[in-house]
Amino acid sequence: MLKLVRVLIRILLKRSDKAFLPEVDAYVSYFNKKDDFRAYDSSLLEEDYDIKDFDVLWEFKGFGGDCSINHIIVHEYASLSTGLLPRFKNFLKSKFNPKPDLRVFLNENVKNGFNFNDEIEFCYRDMGIDESFLLYSKNLNKEYDFVYVGAVSKNRGIDKLLENFTRKNLGKICLIGNVDDELYKKYKHNKDFIFTGKVKYNEVPKIASKAVYGINYVPDKYPYNLQTSTKLLEYLALGLKVITTDYWWIRNFENKYNCSFYKVREKDFAISRDKLERYNFSTGSFDPKDFLWDRIINKSGVEEKLFKLFRKSA
Image 1 (spheres, rainbow, N blue to C red):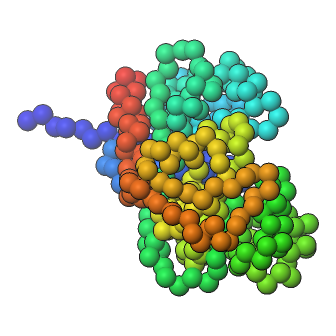
Image 2 (tube, rainbow, N blue to C red):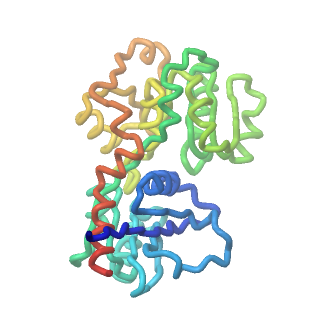
Image 3 (cartoon, rainbow, N blue to C red):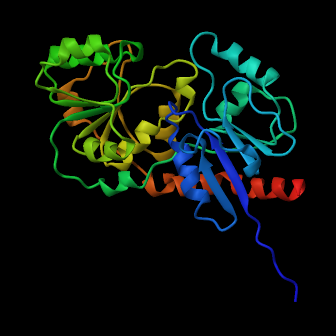
């Protein structure tokens, strides 16, 4: 009788200690449930690990990267370049980054932004939601009116939000994330502002679910306005009513899922409490279960592509 030999594909997901990248945790969890894969987060391994122990090297791309003929190389582009001259940075990456065996893009906008001119295999993997957010979706114990998750900094324009809250006495807001020293000193004595600082990711849903409204601040400029807002997905999974800046991706999301969010101007982040309370929020056909990480990764087809590449290299 022919004996079947089980394939074991060992994946090294390369993450620095400072990188957030919740998708790495999602990939490790997803692939380690499979009999044919073992996935590892490089930031959790001993510094002297040997890449020869792995079959797949998975990089989250900036500039440069590994060149190896002995491994399957995956380049993941979870976002377009940001900062100064982002389109030029995209161009440089597309021309000078080593060619991998597979590219993973957040969505079609990101793929088109890099405009790679080759025949390298690719797939799309959108952002997902951790199951822990669904556990707190029916939390009726509300301790504050609003929650904002993200960096509390002038660079993100959050000073406009805080000024508006102070001027209009809009209610209690919880701010989850790193805080600029200047902003903290200015508002730390305001009883309506709750600064948690940076917290562990698994603590975010418990804290954020205690709000009524979730604030999604994304500037309406390239490339932010073309990319998925994970924060918005998490707010919806928690059952929060969404207040958001107005930009292309949010309009597209609303149309696709027949949702309706309260939109504010980016320049002053002006919220009217009267209008907010009268606003007809709707989550339409959005189902948070469709955005759980396991479903998102499975839908991407990356597992099948890795099998194909592994067989080809064997």
